[in-house]
Length: 243
Image 1: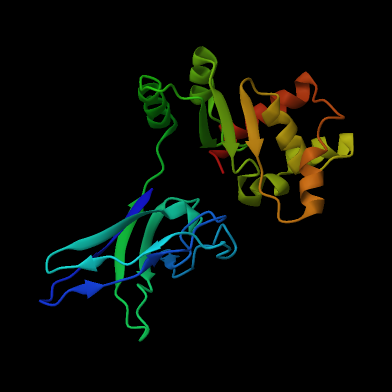
Image 2: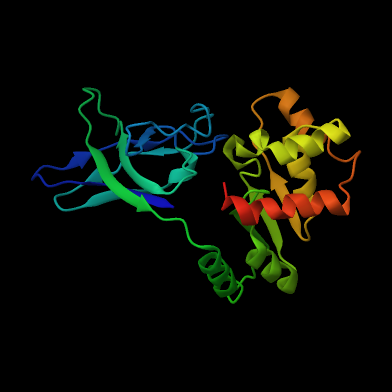
C-alpha cells in the first residue's frame, strides 16, 4: 500500500525544501514521520523499531508557484496493520524548515479482508501477469485455512508464505494444539508451525521478539504429526472460522 505525500507551492515566491539524506542502510526514508491509528485510537506499531540509516544523497528542490514535490511511501514500512478496519493516517516531513511549522497530510482508509474465494481470484489474475508470480503471502494458520489458495499454488507450482501463522496468539491458547504438543514435548505454536510446513508448497514466517522465541520456532524438525493429529488440526480451521 502506497501513501503519496505532496508539497505544493501556492504562494507567489519560490519555495525551497530539503529532502533525502535519510535512507542509506535503512528500510525507509527516516525524515518522514508516519502515525497510524485505528478506530479506538490505538497507534499501530512501528515494524522497524526506529529510524536507523547511514545518510544518503539529499536534494533541495526549489518550487515555483503551482509546482509540487511528491514522494510515495510504502505504508507497511512505517506501521504494521494486520487487521481489517478503518485507520487514520498522518504523514509529515521536516522539509528542512527550522521553525518546525511543517505541513502534514492526513487521510482515512478502510481496509477490507477478502473472502477466501476473492483471495483465490486475485491470485489467479496475478498468475496471468508478467513476470510470473513466485510467492503469495497470506494469513494462514491452523485456525485460518487457505484451501483454495493452496490448490492454486499446487497447480501453478507457487510458494505460499504463511503470514501470522500463530493467529496473533490464538494458536498458542488452543486446547487441541496444546494437547498435541504435550504428547511430543512441544508447544502449541511448534505444533502449528510443524503442521504448516507439512502443507504442500508452504513456508511460514512467525514473528519472534527474542532469540529464545526464534530458537523455539526453529525447533520443529525433530518430531512428526501422525494422521490422527493432522485430522484434528485440519478440523480446527473449519470449526473456528479463522484467526
